[in-house]
Image (cartoon, rainbow, N blue to C red; front, side, top):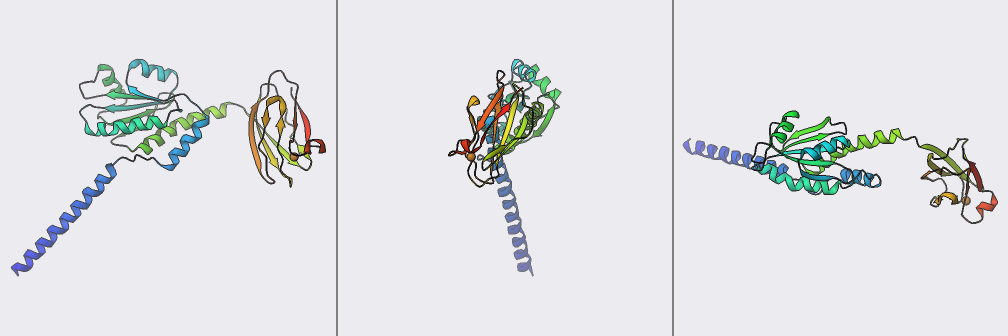
Length: 272
Ligand SMILES: [Cu+2]
C-alpha cells in the first residue's frame, strides 16, 4: 500500500514538472521578438514606396522635435522607456529596425524617459498627459495629435509596423479623397478609340484607363505629354496618370502599334 502511494506521488510530481516546463517553454517563445516581419506589413510598406511622406526618424524626445512633429501633422510614435528596464532594452533594437523599414512614411519616433535617471519634468508631464504610468509603453498619435494606439509591454516588430501603418494609411486615404482626379476610360478596338464625353480642363489631374476590347494588341500615346501606355493585350486594361498642362488647347493621341494610327486609331481631345 505504501509503495503504491509513493509511486502515485512520484507520478504526480513528474506530471507537474512536465506541465511547469511546458508552460515556461511556451511563454518564453512568445517573448522572443519576431525579427522577420509579416508578409502583409512588407506589402503595406511597398504600397507606400510611391507615396513619399518624408523620412521617418527615431530619436530621444525633445520638446522642439515633438512640437514640430505636431505642427507638421506628422504621425508621432512615443516609446516610454526607462534605462534600468530589461524589457525596454530588448525592445530598443526592435524599435530601431521598425524605423529602418519605415523610411518613407514620415513618422516621428521619440524615446521618452520615465521613472529613471534621464527623466525630466518635460518627459514626466508628457507621460502624465497620456496617462502612462509604466515604462515600455507605446503611444501612437495621429496627425491631429490624438491617441490612436496605446500599449504597455513588449511588441513584435511586425505588430509595431502594422499599428503605425494603420495610422499613416488613414491619413493617406484622406489626402487621396481631397484631390479631385478625373477618371477617364478609353476603349480600344480595331481600329478606333472610344472616349467618354468628359470635359478636360487645363491643369487637371487625369487617371486614364485604356481598355482593350479588340482582338489585337493596342497602346495609347500622347506625344505632347510624353505619355505612353504599355502594350495592352486583348481583354486587358492599363491605367496611366498625368496632369494636363496649363498652356495647351488639345491633346493628340494615337496607337503606336503597327499602322493602327493610320487605320483610324488616332484623335484629339479638346482641352478647355
Ligand atoms: Cu492599336
